[in-house]
Structure formats: C-alpha cells, structure tokens
Image 1: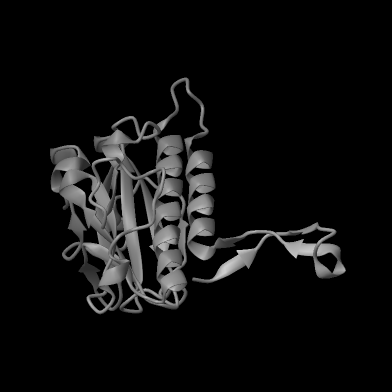
Image 2 (image 1 turned 180 degrees about the horizontal axis):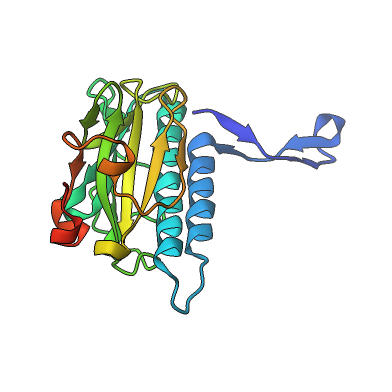
Length: 228
C-alpha cells in the first residue's frame, strides 16, 4: 500500500536529527477528502432552504462519492462501480473486479451505515438531512451518438470511466412546473465528476432526446411531468 509522508519532526536519536512522521495511505486520504466534501455540503441554511440549494448540496455529495469511488480505483489499481437504483432513490459504491476478490471489502468510512454489507457503501438520498426527502435521482445515461440509459458508473485503474463515454446523472427537487434539475457530468477521458447548472428543463428536453433515457417516471410529479 502506498503511503504519503505528511511531515517530519526533530529527533536527537536519529541521523541528522530528523525522523519521518507517520504517513497516510492513499485510501485514508481519500476518506478524509470525502468527509471534508460531504461535511461542506451539509453546511447550508437551516431555515427553509430552497430547492436549488438542496439540489446543489446533494449534488456536491454525489460528486464527492463519485470522486471517492474513482480514487479507490486508482489507489488499488482495480475497478470500482457506483450503481444507481432510481426507483429506490439510492446508489451503491462497490468493488467490481472478480480477479481481485480481496478488494471486495470496502475501507471503513464514517458515512457507511452500520447495517451496510462489508462490500457495499449505500447512499440513500431520502435519508440525507440536507435533502429533506425532496431530492431524487431521476436519470442516468451515457452521452454518445445516442443517449444510452445505464444503471452504473464504473472507474478503471487510471480513474477513467469504462467505457470511455460521458455519463450524466440527473437530480430533481420539486414537482410539476416547480421542479428543478441538476445534471452531474462525468468526463469521458479523466472520469472527473462535476455538477453543472441548475435548470428547469427535465433531462429529455435538455439533451434533445426523448426516447432513450433511464428515469423514474413517478418522480417527475404526475401528468404534468410526463414525457411528451
């Protein structure tokens, strides 16, 4: 396991008076960075935050988890997957490489529920305090010559998405004409995730495609939210 030295301290018993401080593994650093990003997302106005604020905060958490999964893939030289269950409004981080079963057990994390299986980190959007039960993941698809619906995002040993196509995850807050959406984009080359701008357009309008997007129909708020 690679360790990164974080400092040295003086010691009269070592040559040159210096001794290396304890290093952190890359996985430990990933966990710390993930904690910082998620805690930052939880810092929001407590009195009546609007749907856009909720979307941005939840989007920041999703981006942090995607970055964490990508970092695990790089640190271990393996493949990790984030699997989205739109009907349950949750996603699951897991190792996905049958040739490396020793990596199936995920690192310890303060954000894993006590009842999570050892090989999964389950993130339930309905249980996020910042979401207040009003933010849903409604669409996951790859952007290529056609919009291909998918249920997972996978990162290879170099952090690249597999296959190498742009993937978008769409979040929604509100219903009907009041609904707001936040697309999260995963770069097709680097695998880096970023939250784009909040929009009032649902994913099938925003992408100009109407026939091939995976989404949870019930979450769009009834007849006024149905696809044309």
